[in-house]
Structure formats: C-alpha cells, structure tokens
Length: 406
Ligand code: PMP
Image (tube, rainbow, N blue to C red; front, side):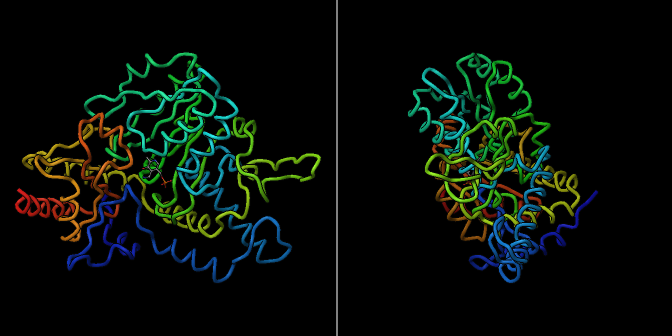
C-alpha cells in the first residue's frame, strides 16, 4: 500500500520552512523528531483549558487533568504492549529511566564482584549510570564487543554470560548506526544465567519496534521527543514484580502513602517512582502524538522507511569514497557514513548551508566509534515523513560539498 506522504507532511508544521534559502530537508530524526499539529494542539489545549495539578485536587479541573494524565499512561502502555499501565513510570526520557533503574535496582541488587554487561555500541546514557553505581557498590561494567559490521558479537556475548552477570543493558537500536539488535535472543541468553535485561528503546519506539511482551525484556526505556512528542517526557517500563520490589529513588510528594517522623510508607506503583508534580502537559501531549500515529497505517510507514533506506544505500554504494557504518540489513532508516579525506563536522556544515540537517560527530557513543576505527561520522536519520526526493537532495548536496572540500 502506498502512503500519501504529502498529506502526512502537512501535519508537521516545522517541516515546511526554508533554511539558508533552501527548503529544509530534516534528516536528524535520531536526535529528535518533529511534532504533529495534533500534539501541539494538545499542549495548547491543556494549558488553555485543563491546567491543574493531578491526583490531589478536589475540583473539576484537577479531576479532568488527572483523568487525561492517567489516560495518557494507558495510551503509552498500549503502544508498547505493556500488560498493565502501572508498569509504566513517567520520566524525563531514556536517560532518566536508565538512571532510575541503575540507582534503584542497581543499589539493591548489585554488590562487589557482580557484573553489568553493556554493549560497545551504547549511547553514553546507557554506560555512565552503570559506571556510577558500579563504582559505589564495587561491581564491574564489562563491554560486549561488536563486530566490524557494527553488530553485537553474539559469540563474545555468550562467552561473557556467567553467574557474575546480574544485568545486561543494551539499546534496541543503535543511535550511531541504526542497527537493530536481536533483543529477544539476547534476552533469552541473559535470562538463562539469571541476569535481568534493560533495553534502551530511545531509537526503537519511533520506528514502531517497541513490544515489550514480545521482546521479553525486564525494563524498556524511551524518550517522548524521539516519538513525535515533547521534550522532557518519557517513560520506563518495568515488569511489575521487579518494580514492586525496588526502592524509590527520589523522595517527595506523590510517591508516599503516609509520612511521619517515625517512618514513611510509600505509594503503590507507578506513583512510588513519581515524586513531585509530574510533567502533566507533556505526558498528555505525548499521548496525542501516539493517537496521531495510531491513526496511520503502521505497516505502510515501516515499508516506506525500508524503501527510503534501500534507496539511500544504493546511492551510497555508488558514491565514491563513502563508507557506510553498520550492516545494511536489520536496521532502521539511518545512514551513518564517513567520506574519505573529509571531516564529518565540515561535511555537516556544508550540508546545513544547503538546507540539510544531519548530525555529525561521535553521537554520544564514543566507544562505538573507537571500536569501528573512526572518530565520528555523518548520520542521516530518516523518519516516515521523509521522501525519496529528499534522499536525492542529500546526495546532490554531498556531491557539491565534496567538490568544495577535495
Ligand atoms: N539512548 C539512545 C540510544 C539515544 O539515542 C538517546 C538520545 N540520543 C538516549 C539514550 C538519551 O535520550 P534522552 O537524551 O532523550 O534522555
């Protein structure tokens, strides 16, 4: 089935602007996606009509805000196929979700001699929180090697799995390369030695890959702003029995059942992990983005992205001196590449001058870049609202940039 991309693009106001005199070609969706008008309207409506605090008011506006806020949690739970909405904790995004698990679960369950495995491809936010907690408790963070093709080396992973390993943390999709990891298989392998698994879904959710029951992971994290929603909102999914057993990591209002100087008791899930006034408006607006996505033909979006990737990779093969990082199969629509003799930052600047937005550098994944023997790359990351003619624009602009630089 073919998509009406023009109609979809009309729903995203930020796509329709010129940059440096050229129509914008936005290929930085891995950093953040643009927002549908429905999400922007939901934000404006909340502050214009429903603005109130949740869970505590004795008035109509507070009831309305609470109802919409909790309905948003349910929408999100259904989107990732969580078995129950109390398993979905609102956070500021993937970074905060990983920190929540590292501090709450990690401090309770990790001790001297234990190991946390993280892949070499991880974003810094799925390395550093584990290092901080490991330092505190005397555990060790051990990298899972990757192959030259930029995929996790499953044999090396298997060899690392023993009873010292208590947690395995890796991204669903590598932000630096777009490669999709074999999550189900890696989860099964980790569970065999009794380790828990956290999947960083920051780059998975926006490509419709997040089905936590199918993946079988213990924790799944993501950021709303990479899912066509606002910044500053995201979520942690955790298996309810694990979240139940974990201590709170932030204290304050909302997360308590009763407070006294003799001792404080904590609220039930999910509120135990949501201290203070939550990000109500952005949670509701994220749900509006998901409702918008639910109204589109998801399989058609996935097929369209696959078509964009195939077209971009074909062009990349024909482009002299271009080395694409990562395998060409099992990936989302990302082209992460280096050009012989050209620094990625220079290339990024010349693309920007032609109205093309990409990301350059190490993509907050320094160990991954080191393992692949490069100091950075240009990353063109696509979404379903990108077009084949935008792929053409990218390669025309690259040709011009190369003429200028070499
Ligand atoms: N993990 C991955 C794979 C990412 O791509 C990102 C964002 N670039 C993050 C974690 C962190 O997400 P955020 O900054 O939204 O918390």
